[in-house]
Amino acid sequence: MVKRAGGALLQSIKIDQRSSRPLATQIANGVRDIILAGALRAGDRLPATRTLASELGVSRTTMVEVFERLVAEGLVESRTGAGTFVSRALDAAGAAASGAVTPTEAAPDAAPAPLSRPSTAAPTRSGPALPAFAERLPHTVRAFTTALPALDMFPIAQWSRQTAKHWRGKRDVVLGYGDATGYPPLRRAIAAHLRATHGIACDDGQIFIVNGAQQAFHLIGSVLLQPGDKVWFENPGAIGARNALLAARAELVPLPVDRDGLVVAHGQRVAPDFRMAFVTPSHQQPLGVTMSLTRRFQLLAAAEVAGAWIIEDDYDGEFHYGGHPQPALKSVDRAERVLYVGTFSKTLFPALRLGYFLVPASLVDTFEAVFRSYLPGMPSNPQAIVAGFMDEGHFATHLRRMRRTYMERHRVLIEAARRHLAGLLDVEEADTGLHTIGHLRADLPEAEVTRRAEHRKVTVAPIQRFCLTPVALNGLVLGFSGIKPAEIEAGAVTLARLLEDMVSEPGRLAGGGDRGEG
View 1 (cartoon, helix red, strand yellow):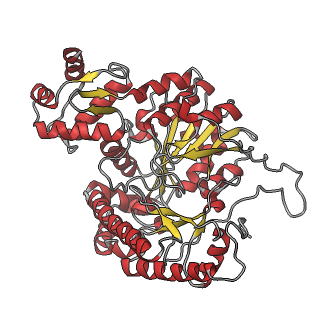
View 2: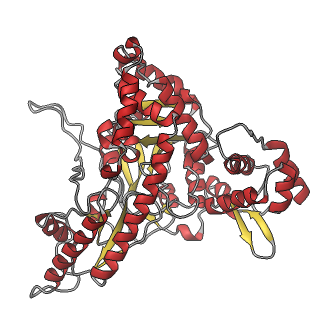
View 3: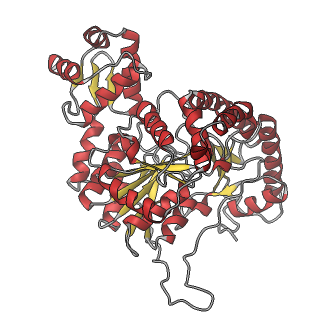
């Protein structure tokens, strides 16, 4: 077994010593491809790191890093005294494809009902009936606004130099019409970034540049869905994507989320004929859980059986704080069902209004026709500046700096919560992203807390605001990325005083209060 596994690895893995990608990344991607292609099966033992290092001509330290990364991703598992084996999570894909349900996928007691199809009533003088869109979240820079990058840390001087350099370019490039599908150098830079850091095999022709992730969701829904098509949707889930898919006249089917992410088996029971699924696997919006590898394979298998598409929204997955992140769902998509959506609003700054999505090769011609037929494309100047920022290495440097910044601000929030909010708001630690959640005492209804916090200039969002149907949670979504440490501390003190005042009010009963938003 060891020799066969080692031989397969040596025959398949290609190492480019001249590549800018680290050797560990190249090897990890190669091993991942072999496993996902089925050359290595669940339970197969891998050669020792020392053996592989010798056979591949790299240091043992490099191979240790490779194995640590694959263990963190869930593709392999280490057994003390026995060695390293291909993860048994890979069995999940076959189980899901055959319709089997694992014990951990047991259905909740009360199955949420699908959201009613948006009204298609005839137009009136005030226009056609519209779906019940959810209001977008506020973006004032203060504790604890979500979805904000650290604007105070952005390298304005460096950006200005890149801007000036672009404006000294050829006038037909700077002032003329751009490519509707996106500025070619930016598409190339994004594809290279996804290959190097996310393990996604793609080329620039699969990348389309849009006016933020919201436009990507709407375009995907409009092109691939018919009115009334069922879409599996995380409950609670992302408000912007919900609105975009409602605008495409989809029927959203709310599916519960547990510690492993979207409960796929529940979706197979209530809507096996789904046409699309929307997920945030790297950092679930808003609960913050990471979709397990087992659940990812189950979702991919279910989509393949149903002939459905999957939208993977990787809105803040660049910011992972604990070891190596899970691979992107797209990176393990061998059936080509996933459309991957990314945004520069979180990695750079929101005013850019730049996002992108990556489509399977089978959909490239379809989306190219849509873009070239009636979409004018994004302004080329900001695209060119971002492309230069990426090509010169500034983007990667900025991401590393922001990871350190957000890790520090997350630590400040957790410590402030322990000092001031203990017993009132149980704030969860996060290992990815720009926000986390806190669980309120039962006698502190989230909607009322949200209203009172706003009066005290503190922004929090109730979890129910993200829900298509009510869930058994009473808590708040707390952003920390865009707020300086001193403001995080002050916000925690203000929120603690507010909650203490509410607890001390006469007549407040445990479990009482309004659980709605009001």
